[in-house]
Every structure is written in C-alpha cells, then in structure tokens.
Length: 354
Ligand code: PEP
Ligand code: MN
Image 1 (cartoon, rainbow, N blue to C red):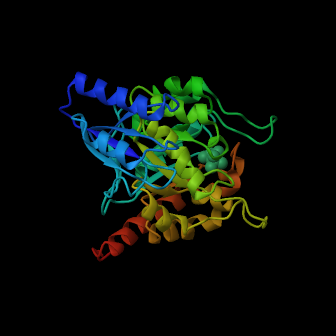
Image 2 (cartoon, rainbow, N blue to C red):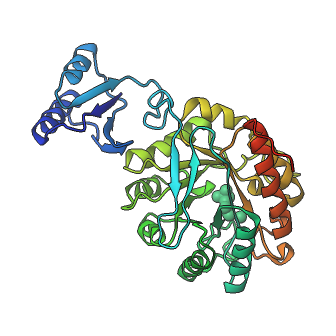
Image 3 (tube, protein in one colour):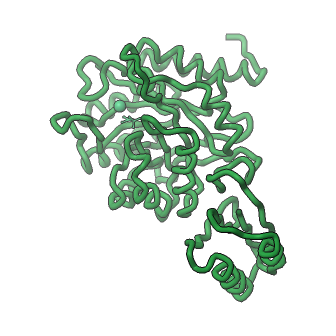
C-alpha cells in the first residue's frame, strides 16, 4: 500500500496520520516517509490493512490518496507511477548535466576504464570519451575483485583523479561504492554511485545509498543470479530509504556457457519497462566479457529500448589491469556512439541522412 501525503498537510494533520498508522500496524512495521516527484509518500507491505482501515486512512486530512500495490516492490512499480522517471546526472560543480530516462529520451552512453589505474590512463581515456560524444565517464576506484591478489583499485586517490577528469572534460562521473560507511565519501566525488552486481544483497549498502544526503543517483547493477523481482526489491530499498534516483543496469547473469562471461538478458529491458518507471541501461562489457561482441550488443540493447549503455574502454586494452578482454579502444567507442545516435534517431522516426 502507498499513502501519498498532501503537500499542504499541516504538522498536526501529519502527526494524526502517523498515530493512526502506528495503531493499524501495531508498531510492528517501520513507517518511512519518502519524497517522490515533490510528494511525500509512505509505502507499507506485509501489514494486513482491511477495507475499514483503508477507508479510515483515506479519510485522513493529510492524505491525498491511498493505492493498493500488489507487487512486493511498491515505490518503483509502474502501478504506482505510470510515467517513466527521468533522472538528472551531474550535480558537481564543473559537470555537464545529463538526463537519463523519460519519454523519448536520447540514450545516455557512459564509458571509461574498468578501473582507474593512474592519472595518464584516466585523463587520456576521459578526453577520448568526451570526444566520442559519450556523456558520462566511468572508472572504478574501489574494485570488487574475485581474487584478493588482483588489483583492488586506487581507492581515495582514484576518486581525486575522477574529480580532475571531470574538471578537464566536464563529464559527470560514475564510480562504485562497496561499503555503507563509504557512501558519503564517494558521493562527494561521484555524480552517480554504482552498486555492483556482487553488492545487490548488501542491504545496509542499499539503505546507505538511499539515505545519501544529496540524493546522488544510484546505478544498481543486476546481481549475478538476481531474479527481476529481487532486483526491483533491491531498488525499492534505495527508494524507500529516501533516494528516488535509481537507474537499473542489466550486466548479464550467470549461465553455464563459458564462451561468454555472462548471459545478456535483453528481454529484461521491455519487461522492466512494464514493471517499473525507473530507467534501464545495459552493460554489454560485463554481459559478454568479449570486446568483439560489445558493438552489436550495444545496438541490440538500444533496439530493445534501453535508455543507455555503460561500456568499458581503455587506451591499451591488452595492458589493462582489470577487464582488458572486454574493453574496447577509444576508436571503437567513437564508432559505437555514432551508430547508437543514428539508431536512436531511426527508432524515434527521425532518421538523418548521414
Ligand atoms: C564494473 O563495472 O567494473 C563491475 C565490477 O561490474 P559488475 O558489478 O557488473 O561486475
Ligand atoms: Mn569491469
């Protein structure tokens, strides 16, 4: 159930609503107020609210409307909000602003190295990303690696290099956060916080990203074996904790075939568009693990109506400290960005003569 509070409701009216909710739920459920589209809302689940209680709630003077939402995810559901959400990226000074999602939006391409390795590698890549026409720079400073002996990222130094790359190019930056206690620190540098596939079940991290003071947008990657319902409930954690700015990222799921690193689930894109109002992007690099598959899977993702892409690019992919096999060169990125924009125009019925 979702209760939308009237924006003009007085503090007495709100207090009255809260005490009724406490009575109805028997103080057994957390009652969190979240702001969505300039409205305060309260989502409740697992509480048996009968018709009489629902009427009593809707009669409260603080209440604008009460909606019953059947899915376990509420605030992120299309049933709650029919209009696709658009999210503005780039709140840091010196950053260009980029909008992702919403009706007929231009695809947003995020690109950069898997990991920030050193100043020269990052700045060279950042300039190439800018020149390609991609709109957001990616780069991991904290890297979740399968082996403890692999490069773990530059940490805080990597965040400072990302700041410098933004100053030079104007590109907003996305970088991963792995620990709840690091959210505020990473948010001081990042225009988008990435929550990686391995962290989707780290509920304290999801909540901390939801509570981050500036509501920095969060890119939530699908877990290695997350069902769509689990993924949407992870997104719900972030939104319910106070941050409505969530972007979903399909990055492939575990399969049995070692030919590709993961299996790109393209069908999840139109399905997610039915189920949620949040924007959906695709990471063809981690989804395939093979750089030669990245261009065509990028096109396929846009054809399936993804609102964007996140692609790994490296000036010298074969010497990358992380994920070189799936990283493309700056020249290949330029070609992909060009193709994607032509392709998106065709899909919108605005084909240009090249
Ligand atoms: C990454 O983006 O480099 C990364 C580690 O991604 P994922 O969490 O999808 O594996
Ligand atoms: Mn990577």
